[in-house]
Length: 124
Image (cartoon, rainbow, N blue to C red):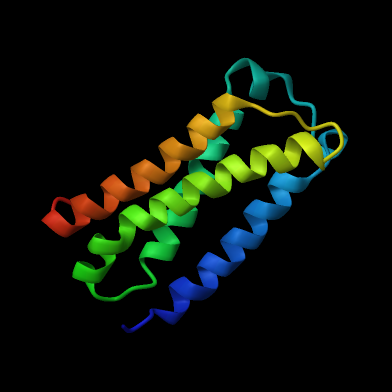
């Protein structure tokens, strides 16, 4: 299986950046009122997890292997999102456990899955 090296490095950078953002203490996050009012944080979660699944899946050059394995990549992304919520709850000061964040993480993973299928069918 050939790996696309640019996607590999992009995935690693995205994973490290996502982990850093999810592990920031709550008092280090900026207090922006409209972000909470409009639930922009959920859009951020969707984007972060879409990026994780998209970049990891695109490491594989062959589309047939990518499509056959993406469901496991999605499951791993969802489990990572759930695990990070528990990390925030128990290990990160001033961060809370939020089921809505886990749902947003799963939505981002699933959107990347659908994007890959659309690409496979030639729609995108």
